[in-house]
Length: 347
Image 1 (cartoon, rainbow, N blue to C red):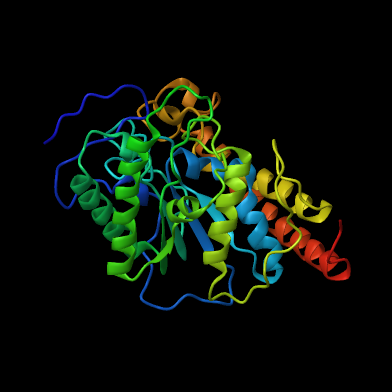
Image 2: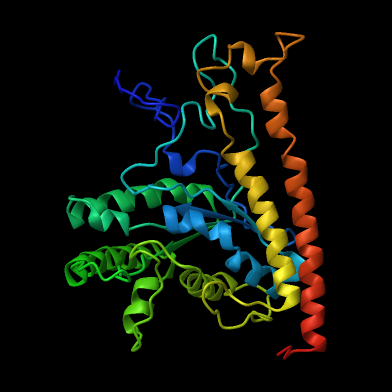
């Protein structure tokens, strides 16, 4: 047995090493896919994995908006499973997160529905460049994570990290940082080529630009403009091979937020509503009382019937509004797409 000291609910729950060890955080909640090809009659499910920049994509909704308006008849469904501070070395999750229960009296399993991913977008490598571990260690850990993820989706898209910046002019040694980051980007390219996986090379695209565009707010985390640029790069790759028109209705971003046409902005607002619901469902507050180590306390149970736990039902009630939100997203996308065909140049 391994003994791990934990603080709070966001600690990794350790079990015996071997076949019974809980899955890495990156795949918790995902269903292994069958060997059957993807059913193109149903909208694809796209899962986002990564650290803070990947997590914050859902706060803007740019990628989802572009793909929704481009393919309103089969709007992709998105589930952002990125977690701040996730790296290839560790993806820490709450105890019993998408697992089968703890010891009594906290024995209830996490019963939330698992996610059948068609496409997984893996965006890591930047935080690891600030880590003391060698590039060889990164290559090994990244390759192992890719192998863990491959059974869980029909398509795996690897994304290289964006370069570091110094927008605050505090004297960061960008040459040293980005040299190490470039090594990680090259490792990701090599793994994508070796394993025949799709690649979105943000690092290469940024490095090839003649104009030095600032895309981060603090040198690491993307600004709204940066997220717009990333969304465009990802959309190009995700649309390849799909029956979708080129992206429409979206205009060049202007700080502090991207300016969209009225129809596309309506789509985006509905996407943001869905994303808020998803976060409440996937990462609910008071985890210890939901499926963690406080399931037995009075405040976790019904005040009339102690045998009834009200919190799981409250969380599960969010699933239906998520589904309804996706119906509304598709309707808004169809309307926006139709308006664009009538007036292709709204400016």
